[in-house]
Length: 112
Image 1: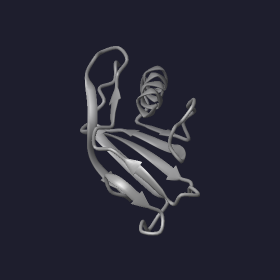
Image 2: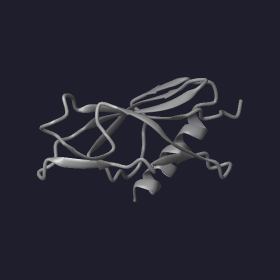
Image 3: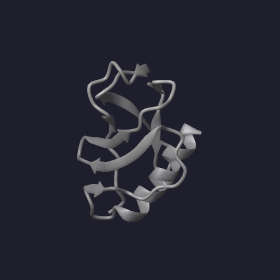
């Protein structure tokens, strides 16, 4: 399900970002993670997805190193290169300092 969310997100990015570098509060469909995407930054060397997390009743969430985004016009997958605000694998809300995390990928090439 996480892959479907990322694919839907990339569909949105590819249609809305012809000249944009930062998308604040992007619209997206179904999400399988506990929170919302607050910002997308498309830079020359990286693509950064910013999330605001909601606390879950079981007090933890998972982030996987195998997560990726994919340009739907091609088959190249951009895998996670870095994570800020949390760690890969299981995260407990009581141990993280903030409810905002950023998932960093290699550069997303825009079709300009």
